[in-house]
Length: 447
Ligand SMILES: Cc1cc2nc3c(=O)[nH]c(=O)nc-3n(C[C@H](O)[C@H](O)[C@H](O)COP(=O)(O)OP(=O)(O)OC[C@H]3O[C@@H](n4cnc5c(N)ncnc54)[C@H](O)[C@@H]3O)c2cc1C
Image (cartoon, rainbow, N blue to C red; front, side):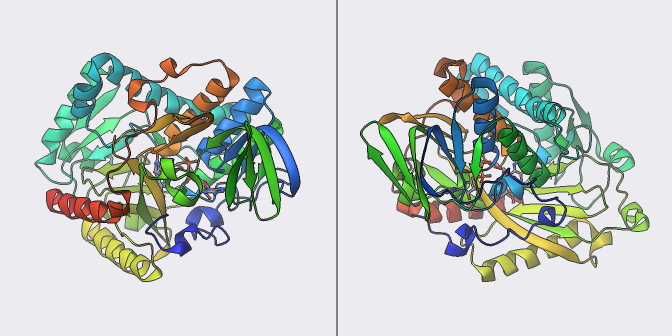
């Protein structure tokens, strides 16, 4: 099961995000609503976020496969409809040096190249399918939160440009203050020209509409509550129907629970990420803080502050923390984030926030995403654990799953860092305590 509060999994409740107020509803006919009666298909996808929707879209468009998606809530209800909209990379908890040491230069390069391709996939999906994802900013900024951390950025810049051949630029503190923004925790930045910002729920709904247009059948409000095997076929049970399928894709990421897929769930660590958004800032307020940039920014803290100015002048500020998902801890987290926002951006100390929400990102012990087939059942595929960076990695992984199922790719085509099932976590029941210890350690290290 999971140690988080049940409310975190209540797909009948809105996420409470700003994006929900800023996104038109799905066109009629895209979400077919709850699965009813006994249906069958070739491929059933569990989870209607970027991974599941991209898998369904590519299966239907490129491979003419009969595919259905079952999603507990509205399509895009999970992390895909409520993230910060940073379309960037790499999706890993490893540093570039650790990545090189563990996988060697050739495989590390394959991994990074695949994730640059993932960012491009988001751009091309929006162009090809007319998805209005509101792109913003040319590149993303990784900002040193203390003078010491600028040295880490120098190392990162040398590897990104030298070993991986990517267009990056180191910027000293004064340069960042002059051209991007200033704050009490700005000590220089690394500009990575590959990423950009998006409106995440518009992307999720646009991807759903595109998948439906190409023939995928999408069912919101269709939580899979039981999963049985009947000979070689799978039978997925929801409150109002059953779906028989030859093959199943698990695309439930941080919302994966042990009651459905325990062997996989025991290898994952769901982690809460939180966001506050302010009311629109006036031009004078933005100028007071020297804010000039459209680029999404993340700082060098392990528990991350990530922040960006939205097109209507609202400021989005995100952080990790909270081990329970209870309402009380949510309120506490919101208060902490509002205080920290005011400390890092003192000119906005008194600006009220209008929205707070949170959701699960997903980690594992390997610290890289996982794409593969279940070792005990090769008709079950999975793609998950994007380590908080799934806006581009998840649609890309969904496409890989479609290529595997469609027979146009093999597992050898997947970079080693992403391939196969991650290791089981020792004593998975203790994950909450491991996470508590890790949060404590990173808090110390971040100061
Ligand atoms: C607050 C927050 C901020 C983030 N910010 C960023 C960011 O700026 N940039 C970035 O790259 N990444 C970010 N992420 C991570 C990113 O959103 C995810 O990696 C990505 O959306 C994962 O997509 P997914 O489709 O795999 O999972 P999800 O979008 O989480 O979808 C999984 C779905 O599975 C469904 N589900 C679970 N169990 C069942 C069941 N039994 N039956 C049916 N359906 C089920 C859930 O309802 C859910 O909708 C953020 C995440 C959060 C929570």
